Amino acid sequence: MGITVETTPNPRAMKFNVGSPVGGTATATTAEDADERIAPLFDINGVMSVFMTADFVTVTRTEDTPWDEIVPEAVVALGRTFG
Image (cartoon, rainbow, N blue to C red; front, side):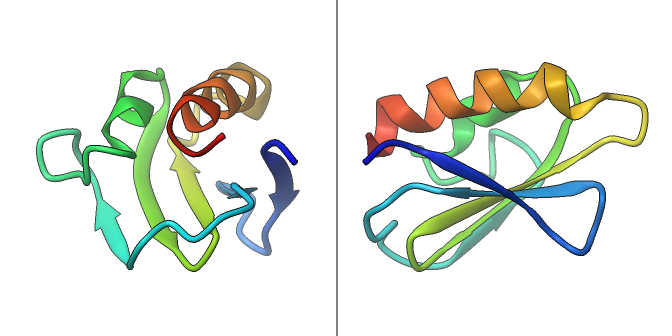
């Protein structure tokens, strides 16, 4: 199926549907406190926090980083883990 991306009511958050259960709820603000499956998202410039539950991952960005810089890299990173 692949990763699909949706906007959220929060303009600084984007929902990434991974198409399979993520295995529990987790929230992180650094790679060090992140589940190993979402830790690579913190290598992407502008990622501020990551939340995962059900079959999706929500990424929150810093105010000064545009989504077009984050989304392609996040899709690749999540595809490696959940794809």
